[in-house]
Structures are given as C-alpha cells and as structure tokens.
Image (cartoon, rainbow, N blue to C red):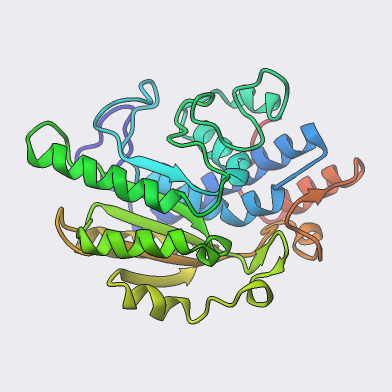
Length: 304
C-alpha cells in the first residue's frame, strides 16, 4: 500500500501490529491532553466525552481516513461526519493531531470569533464536514453523502471515497437514526461505516434509564448492517474492527457499524468517577491534577 504525502491510509508500510497500535495509542493520548487544555480555557465543557472517545478519533484520523492536511476540501478525501456536535472539543483535537488545523489554534476554543466553537460548525472549521448538535441527523446526512459519492464513482467522476459517521448511544433514541439505518441497507451503502460511542450516559441521565436501547447489537444486525461491538478504549480492538469492516466492504453491499463501549473521562480517574459527567464544570485547582493523572497513565503528551 502506497502512502501519499498529506494523506493517511490504513496502516503504514512496514509497520508491525505492535507499532501500529502504539502509534495510534500515542495519538489518542495527545488528543486527550489537547482536550484538557481546551477545556481549561473555558473552565467547563464536554471534556468527559472527548476523553472517552479519544481512541476512536485517533484510530480514524491517524489510521483510516484518506485526506490531505493542506487541502481539507480535496475531492478524493474520505468524509468524517461528527453527528454529536458537542463532541467538537475532541474532534478539534483530532484535527490538530492530523495537521488540518494548527495545534496552537486550540487555545482559542469557545472564544469570540474563534474557528472552534463549542459545538461543531462546518462553516467555521476546516475539516468539519457538517454542523452537528441537533442530535439524530448525522446518519441521515451520511447516507445521502455516501449515496452521492457512490453515484459519482460509478459515473467515473469520483474516487470511491468512504464515509465515516460518528454518533452516540443517546442518538439511538431518535427515530431518524433508525430510518437512516434502514435506508443505508436498502441502498446497500458499502462505502459507509458508522461508529457509535456507547458511554451509557446522556444529558438526562444514564442511557438505560432514559430509553433502553439494548440489545443494540441485535438491532443493528436486524437492520442488515455488518455489526461489531468492541471496547472503544482498546486501540487494538478498534483497529481490528476497522480492518474487518474494510475487508468486507464493497461499493454495493452491507454498510458497517462499530459499536464502541467507552468510559466518560477515560484516563483521568478524577473525571471517570464524576456522577454528573455529561457537561463538566472543573474547578481551577483540578485541571493540573487531571493533567497529572493523564500523564501518569500515558506515553504521549501534547505541548502546552
């Protein structure tokens, strides 16, 4: 497999399995440090989700997506759609890790006139494909984009780009998500991979008490999707799942979904133990403790 400059593809030439896992794991740790640094700028935010989803974001941006950092609108790019707009803090960190936005720009997170608002906006941020935040819409948009990209490829105008949609377990409460899942199978969108962050928490409380969605694996399978469920904080398991999805993918075929069980606040025990963790207010004296706890358990650290 040839790796083009400014373009990432699955794996690296000559890279061992262990080297691949360690590379992505280090990127995930840097994403977590970036998220903490951004959160401190505002003193609050959706830091817990960013920490929990960092491994998923690192796996996609440093190992799966085809893109060019110096040309975010390159037509041949794979599309990553963040349905959960409030996860933008983690997405910005991943975009910085990918070189699409400068790492120093992360310090402007949530500030007036910043390109990095607290909820993702495609009109502001390079590499942000959609404006998320109105939950339950992302998969429907992904289905439309995947269908359009396939039509273009079949007519000789496209490159066979893939679509990755990041959504949350809370979005499985939305009927529009399941309508989109049904539509993706109907149209046999083999160029679509969905990633569901199952952290068992949403704004109104624990997911299983707000609206039970289990058995979620069986539901996706019943909708015809190629379904895998993994530990979303295990980089090796994530990479294997993406490899499996890619191996069975065809232009016309079953869409794939990877159900990722994650822990809100992953890597920072102080935040992992927070009872109210959906939107966190972190006291001024706690930020350095969070950073120390994360550093103690990681090998990669973002500069500050």
